[in-house]
Length: 207
Image (tube, rainbow, N blue to C red; front, side, top):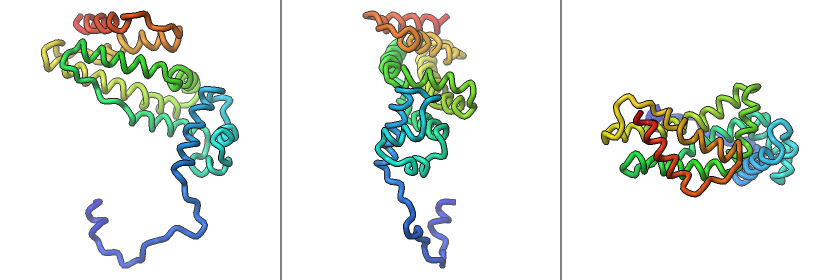
């Protein structure tokens, strides 16, 4: 279809943007996105407002509304963008190495304001908003499950795990405890904690 669009003759002259049409400058868009993260971390979704976002970004409200129709659509868009920035699955050559690398990445990610302040707030809001619930699922659950599936698949191919191993259990025994420690309890991880957790996760997958 794309090829046809580029080769079919079209006698009509190309359309031009109407005079005075608004051009969405990328630097303004990025400033607004950064302001949304700061607002979410500072006041939460319920108290966040387009006015507050615009003020923090140093733009007028119109600049925000040109890009997003509401604060809900803005947050959903940001979470969706966050989802496509997923990291590649670790590939260290061993199950323990992959799990340990996953834990290292996850521990850093869970210290980020997006995880430690914003995500818990949005999880509460997701009970009232199917749009936020779907965006969180895409940004967090689906991407993490995909990474876990690749780690388990590679381990099965190397003979380290039996076929049919539940890949989702990997997240239960790794990211679950990390989230509890870093986001819910908000405690520093003891020295060697990730090593212990990685060994326990590997053992749990082999049960």
